[in-house]
Amino acid sequence: MPGDPQDDCLFCKIVAGHIPATIVRETDTTVAFRDINPQAPTHVLVIPRVHYPDAASLAAAEPAVAADILRDAGGIAADEKLDSYRIVFNTGTGVGQTVFHAHAHLLGGRGMTWPPG
Ligand code: AMP
Ligand code: ZN
Image (tube, rainbow, N blue to C red; front, side, top):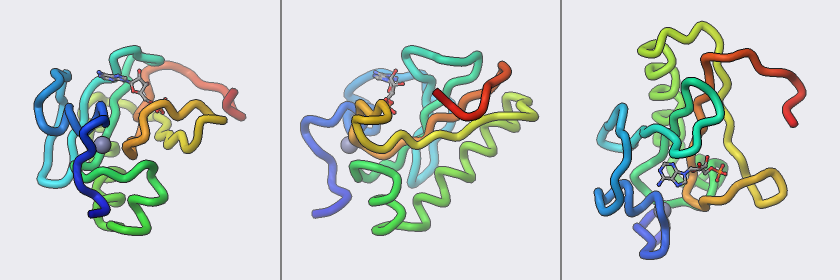
């Protein structure tokens, strides 16, 4: 079924508690945890409990959960007292997506350039 856990998915294993993570927020629909290889002082991944390969496919199938991810990212940014931050959804290998379970990167705590590299 679309959205069901995938045996070979790292983030499904984190959702299930089979792989440890530094969790900063959990809801009925989402889990947020610190990136293992942080690219900024705050680098948190916000993921849905359900498995979809990328953000757009999640939003098409379960738009309320996609909105939950944005809500949680904003809440965590407030908790971390970030007045500026970036939310990134890498989609596709060409722009660096390596885990094919939808996730938002919440990045903040340093200056960033635009356009992104
Ligand atoms: P992306 O490249 O957009 O697919 O992002 C995947 C992110 O997952 C990368 O920033 C990785 O550093 C991060 N990551 C990989 N394994 C783990 C893990 N076990 N715990 C936390 N973050 C991870
Ligand atoms: Zn998954």
